[in-house]
Image (cartoon, rainbow, N blue to C red; front, side, top):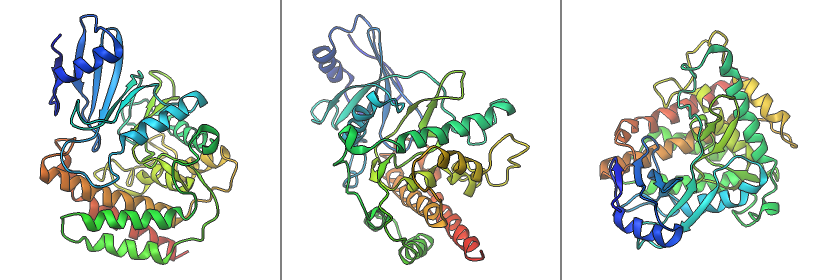
Length: 346
């Protein structure tokens, strides 16, 4: 059966259909693919196969930086976490050979729910907004309570010296970009290197991009039903994830949807301190969030925006609006330096 397709595909739907018939059985007369909008990374599609409602994730076509778009790691971590109660979609299959779609890909069951990309939650009633953010903090704490070795992820990354290794890695990514230098990113990198804290021994399974837009909520309740987009996950320091989670409190609404400038109380939104306190109450370790952790989060996203800009120019970005995000590389670095300057006065 020929697929019903909505949106642009960068692969042969008939070749995928042949593969799926061999792996999942007959399609029952229903084979449909819908490109999911948004997202700056791995192309994602709703896939209906008979009465099965699935999601397909693949690497983007074209040249990619080494280690980027790791769909194999996304799949592995969901396989490990699904039995634990940490909310992730049920994994279905992984195919690492590019023979079918031109890149590796995997399938997972579709989870029904709500995704909020507006950190101010303006479409929700005022009384419901705080509960959403508290659920985000609770879910992150539940992830960091998992012992990686207990779920088969003890070798999912190198424990120790996380920030040192991450900053070196993202500096390499930045310098591998064909874009010109961004002085603000280079200044922020120098600050982070100079302010590197001593390794405190904390190791957790880190999502690597933990933010409101990467969690799905129950259709009516303030409860997370799935953490999505695991490609940057690794063993690391839990306060890196917490830094990613609270980035909206450091950026403006036109800077990837931040909260700067909002009257949080009037909008029914918690303060950063309240979100951090909720998280700290749910983890069994000292979770003192420092300016270094928050600046690191902004630095890494600044470098990611450089990569998005590069893909937009090359025509391989997942989001047709990716080019509009290019200025955020510089602006996120500036926000991080503002944060460090404020901290220096205390």
